[in-house]
Image (cartoon, rainbow, N blue to C red; front, side, top):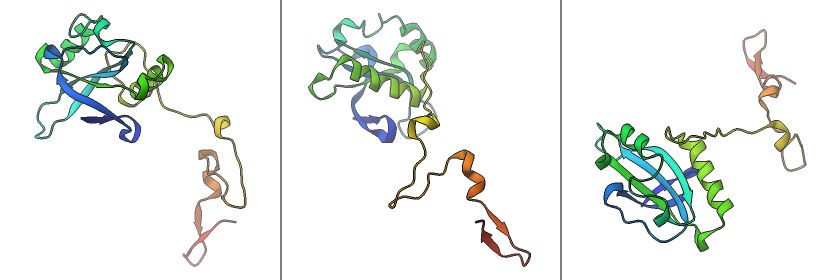
Length: 159
């Protein structure tokens, strides 16, 4: 088992050597990786993330359209690994796509044609204050929270 995702939120089966892996008849999300050299621990670099309605129809192990890129990055097909996640109940296609997009944004796999970036827009969260919370500190408000020195050299909070 290997954990992937934000805060390592998904328990993936594997990693298994891709060249010897028999695809399963199931929908799921997968990550193609290669083992990085030089470390004593097993550290993997994610080179591709995808999702499928059925692993047996995806072209594994090496008939997938992106497999030449995988082999090029790993150096040989024998250094490629796959890890897969089957969401509870198989989940819907859109949920699997969302998980794959999240993993793409986190690991930025070089062999994926589409790349995503994790970010947020200020209007998505907004600005609020309540009896239970302080005002949200946005990067544009940083000067509100800074401290300055008084003439005696002591630090005091701006008001």
